[in-house]
Image (tube, rainbow, N blue to C red; front, side, top):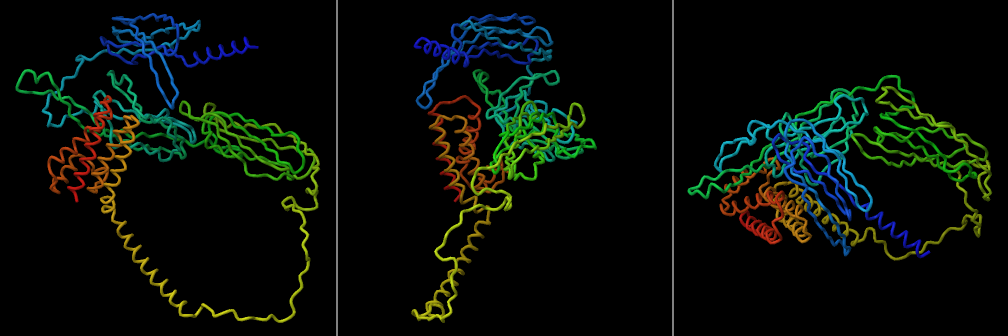
Length: 602
């Protein structure tokens, strides 16, 4: 027995170790002719590995494979986790345009072979000038970003669908300039569609794509699954985003050394995704009576919780619909039960997910029933009709009839047909007296002190209530007037809201949550000055804020400190971690500059 236990534990540890291991490939999807790029194979948590490289054709191997090892150890809630990864890197150069496949590579670890999937790399013809020449402008001038340098696009998987047919909408950003951040994002509103957001990344992931023969960096901002709820040409309104772009400006100094240093200028450009129109056709006429709007491809299954029960015992009928389509909007099927059954509302259990632009899974309807008499009963077949998109016709699913045996109940006092099923059964209570007689004599009334109603204290209480009500009305009316002044409310709450956000940012800094720290600090700075100056979101720009602060005669150095701190926070959100000391310095600057601005705007 001891040997068996040791063997089982060894097998489980081996399976667990290999269940966490993986072998991946990383390579850009699009490159230009003459461009050099990296091909990286990474083995994670695979001990004693032996690497078998792929056959690389149509590319020039400049170097590789070079091996690098990384060990990582983490302590989370007192528990230590350790991982080890080995990377095999090639430096390749594209020779001629076309689409070429890099075959699978394999690695053997403890007699287990892991393989990567073959990947296709598209090589496009490089432009006449590898780097676009742009006019050098002074750092104070506004750099010009062309519309083709950065743009937004909303694409749908289908432009012609029927009512209820799922489709996917994807919002992507395309750029060939250095986008450092985004502001004032307005995602599309899908009027006429039932929509569900299926992809919303916390951190943008950039990929390379071929757009019109040029390489762009693309990022998927949002992805939705749509279900059209009306027919006709439905227009999806444009989406907007303000891109924060870092533009390099070459210094022109007085000495030769100044030519080697560049500065970066922050430029904001609003990009708009063009509207998209989806044509939605109505479903064909002649739908069966059991059709309730299901579109897709489904299967039907029915079953009883028990085949035999006693009278007055509960039993459930389960109707499960499995498939893909608008399964999330399916209505409860109609089930015909025998008249002697007491039926309750159906309970719905959803088990579906969004995959590949549609919803797939199952939906179970549980019908609780109670048979009130004994015998053999037959539940009529359940019918479910859906519109098959591929076949372009209605299809009706019909289950088999279900037979249930109901035996007589042995419970004392149960329903036997002498009283209706809805009657409540309760035991008879024996009271001391069944009949109470009416009093025939005249009652004797005794005087018990003076009456409060009509006394002096009664009228004094009424007067106090009236005076208190009047004062409360005047106070509430004055409070309502103060709250109706939105500008005054925002101005009074600006410092309190900013301090709350600074407190949250300080907690993020202690937790070393880099992205959340700068985001909350940026919100504190922008939110405070917008509330203090009563600016809307559309008017909250740097130029407008500087103009209003100068009108209110705020010190020019304080204005510069405030705006530069906002720029530092925005840039730091997308820059490498500058270290704990730099984050604490920026936090102290934010507290100081908000306090000074509060004194200046009083």
